[in-house]
Length: 238
Image (tube, rainbow, N blue to C red; front, side, top):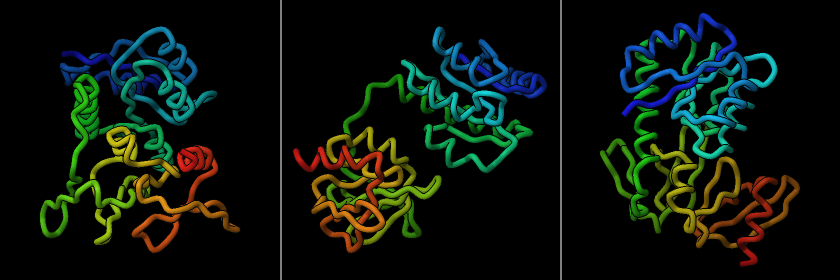
């Protein structure tokens, strides 16, 4: 299978370099290129591709803004950001980017990104498996399995996600979005950085710092963002 790629960068030389590097990967082919974010949005409003290699700093509509719009369209592509700046990484992963490459793009970095993209594309084209009963994690003691029923909540700190349970906290490889999609009826999003077990919710509380949520088995409350507060309140009303 050959994946269709769109390259977007306001620098023609940068686009040419990416196309040359891409030619070494026979499973990917460039079908279009653009010089700004708006042109990318316009292209995806009419056509489809599997992968978008997207610059961030561009005149007019920048890469992050373009990605946010493209992600809302049917059959949105997997996105890999290619930029000269490293201060947009967190925002990039908020739109579920598969990778974040710093210019000048190295062969090995692009290979890594394409591998991640191909895994995600293959997963998207495969029927969803049944939800897991345990969450795996690599620890100093080896691979551990925690029953999903014992998870209190998941938290994200930049690219790192922790699973919080009654025995403590463990770093895991899953993203919050992946967990939210896999367990839509078991975990509830309350914040950009928090996903909680819905059957552990005790109460909401208004504080001077904002709305917080208390969970059974947890000693401290978790913040509820303004964006997610209406959904949390609706859930609690049943």
